[in-house]
Length: 238
Image (cartoon, rainbow, N blue to C red; front, side, top):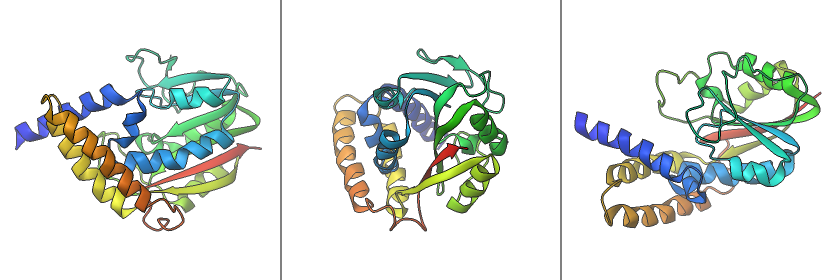
């Protein structure tokens, strides 16, 4: 089974790299589609001015953030990808106090060893009245190991953000058991079929329908609160 695992892993990296800056990226799995359905209205409402995309990775959100921001600074741990502005750990940001209007951080806080320190750094670099938009996993399998440290509940997020000095404005829930279970076959089939001419394109189109169908079934985020796949919060710096 080692060859299968290696193929899935290589395919996953290739598929993510290929579609990261495309709208199709969020149709790769039902988890991605439900997440962006939750984040899009929050981005429109809470993101503005000079924005830090913290843990920007493949720059998946750059286009969306740029539509509502005056400027976007994309930061990740290393600067190997073209388009990243800065390389830094989130625990010690090389940025001035009060130098940003908004911070956006999606699906990153589970990968840091000291989340409260990260949130305190976000608070420090935000101007008074600035906003933090944060999304984290609630249900998720082990990934990006060994740097996969935490899962979060809405109550844990409230505790951490308030402790870091933020006022919690809004909590939203993204996806549920259907999206969680649907994520696995999407990931396996797409990644396995990557690089097979004709077959991948067919599977890709069918998978987009699959992802959007499951996301539509879980469109009411209040329904999925107990078994939420992801949780998003908007906060304001006092």
